Amino acid sequence: MKRILVILLFVVSVFDVYSQVSSLEQKLVNAFLYVDNRTFEENQRANNYIVDQFSRGNYSHVLKSANAYLQSRMRMIEQMYSVLSEQERADLTILVEGDLIFHYILSAAYHTEDNSIMGDIYDYLLFAKQLLLRTTKQRKNALPPSNVTWRDVQKRLGNGDAAIEFVRFNVFERGEIKVLRMYAAVAMTRDSSPILIPMATEKNLTLWVLKDPSELYSVNGYGNALCKLVWFDILNYLESQDINNIYFAPCCVLNQIAIESLPFDKESTVSYHYNLTRLSSTRELVNKHNLHPDKSAALYGDLFYRASAETMQQATTRSAVGTLPYSKQEINEISLLLSGTQYHVNKLSQKQGTEASFKSLSGKSPSILHLSTHGFVNRPIEGNAMQRSGLIMAYGARAWEGKAIPKDTEDGILTAAEIATLDLSGTDIVVLSACNTALGEVTTEGVWGLQRAFKQAGAQTIVMSLWQVDDEATAVFMQYFYEALLKGRQTLAKAVSIDVEIAEHIFNYPHDALATAQRRMRQHPKYSAPYYWAGFIVVD
Image (cartoon, rainbow, N blue to C red; front, side, top):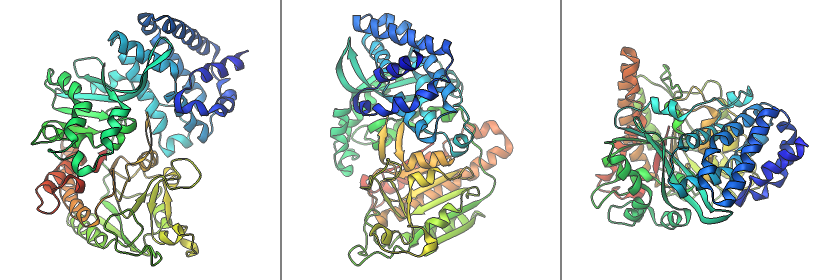
């Protein structure tokens, strides 16, 4: 009987694009048998009660059962996690995102404007993202997800700080969808509990995302309209609490927008008025982050792709697989900057920058890892999103065209799926100086692509791009970024040696370095247009 109930529970909970995962419930049945009867029965009672009360329009009664449902559901996932295969754990995040009862609870809060259960919602969002971003070591050891709550995050906030988890949900009224894919912010400050701030629908947001970056991020372009959709109500709420620093974790289509660089008015961007820190999850404020004492760096650039005559044309962007004339200049300038601050630098260029050499870094990765190459996303091959995005390494162009390559170089196409299996826990920062490296298959929990891959591999901070980057301008941008980064790192290292608490207040040094580089690019006579600098983001 229990096996049947479990299948029914999760079939009911899957909707929208995830309704096609019918085989998933059957695969997980045996794992669900590890859930204790009390937890299962609590979840089933809450599930049935919420469905009944929501269908009657009794939204206040739905909210009263929200805690019991969400807590029992998280316990169920914790209990079954250790017996799931790697693929089943990935599939589990799909069930979390497609949980109909979760959407009913959010809809009830939306209709009633009752924020009494938003702390429970915040906890559930933290939990769901933890499933997605577990590192290679954690997954191999089958450790259950750690329990971080909104109160833990709140304790890490200082005066003038706010934390935001963005969420997407369908707004239901009784049993029917009233608003398709509504976006909202679940926001809190040091002195206030989480509240729900509705924003806009995915349809409205996507209309603006399709605009040209130079127009979307220009202070005189379309970006003002998008800025109002994303930030207007949020900033109105935060302004009353004298907030200066905003830590935010985007979801879904917001992962494809540099919302920190949107034009605030006709003269400035949002980041001019607020210190904005993008995180994969605001639980990063709770997680322990150590600055690795070793000063080592691996720089990949000026790679030997050996493409055919058709693709060997000089590339102006880092998308088409051709030579990158300014990549050599980029890694040489960065090498000089790093060497000048006593870093041990390993430059891997031309035929040295192979996929095999990158994989050999696993378990002994450098503090700084820089990749100046071609990126790709949604490559037209079979497999999941982690196999369809990645980076092109030495000899990769030949493999891309289906031609023979040396035996010891692998194929030169480094996929996100391959990166996710590595141990890069010794790396403080990864800089992906390539096209579209922040993109992938977007979900409520994050981006299934290079971002997820490097986080799972254990890298702490990632610099990525949201669109095709200009080869020449990127070389200049990266010089500016590293100049600011090294200055910030020196300050951080000094603070750590004096007082750990001081270091806590300069958690944002990579974000500050990016903001500094973007300001300098805006003043550049040749590269002031947002296309050249607004597409780069820092995560965590």
